[in-house]
Image 1 (tube, helix red, strand yellow):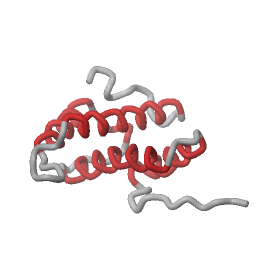
Image 2 (tube, helix red, strand yellow; image 1 turned 60 degrees about the vertical axis):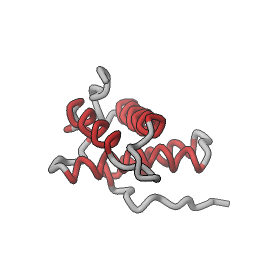
Image 3 (cartoon, rainbow, N blue to C red; image 1 turned 120 degrees about the vertical axis):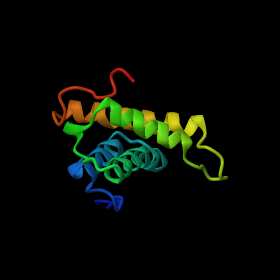
Image 4 (cartoon, rainbow, N blue to C red; image 1 turned 135 degrees about the vertical axis):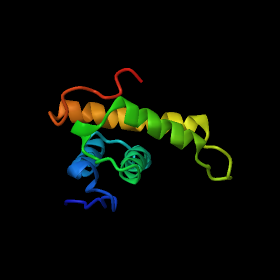
Length: 117
């Protein structure tokens, strides 16, 4: 029996690569919460890119853009109105780094834009 898994509303982000990555994570038996948390980091990056006039095309992503996103993420208010916790920033960073590494493994990206971050 096939089980349908919902795809986030932002599945078209990064030209559909987010949805493919989520499928890959589920195929690797990652927990639903892990898939959700990882996707959240990628969604947040894509939203930041669009809000700052950039495209969410992985082949156009630069280290400078990722650094800008991380600085803004750290300064943005968290759940309690305080700056976002370091652990949250780190979690988002790891999620995006894993996503981009997967893009390389899938042949969607040649060089990792976060290699020096």
